[in-house]
Length: 140
Image 1 (cartoon, helix red, strand yellow):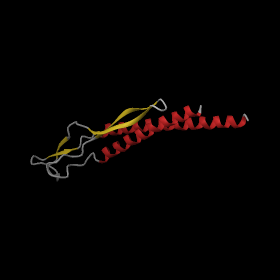
Image 2 (cartoon, one colour; image 1 turned 90 degrees about the vertical axis):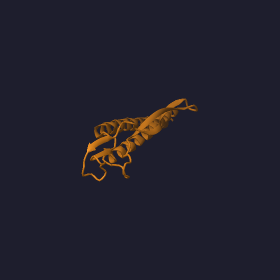
Image 3 (cartoon, one colour; image 1 turned 30 degrees about the vertical axis):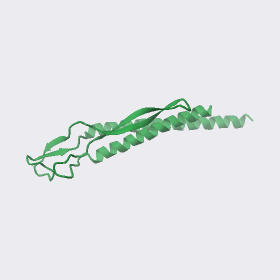
Image 4 (tube, helix red, strand yellow; image 1 turned 60 degrees about the horizontal axis):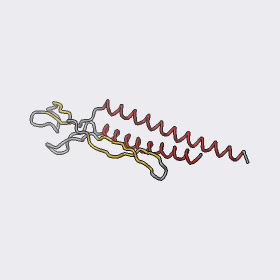
């Protein structure tokens, strides 16, 4: 019984890792949301996106989640008219990252909730394993 519960905890742990990577990427996107290109004519920070994939553990017959790729969003950069900005072009326009703060905050909340759900699953499995051990001790 504890092997199945241990596997459940292991599967939830893979979810914890995947969501922690997602939270790190979201925080990086938020931190760079107002950055501009370093070199004249260069591009600003490009929003990063996390892709997940299923990973099959053949030995245990269980599916886990993993981060398959951290890619960049191909949506266009924001172009804003700010003639006094040091990164402005000849027409006074500045290229800003393609990061939408509202989308990032929503993504952060979703990742946090998924993280918490996986954490609760690990706690539940641990408590059930502990209860099983206690039952086995008292039955002797």
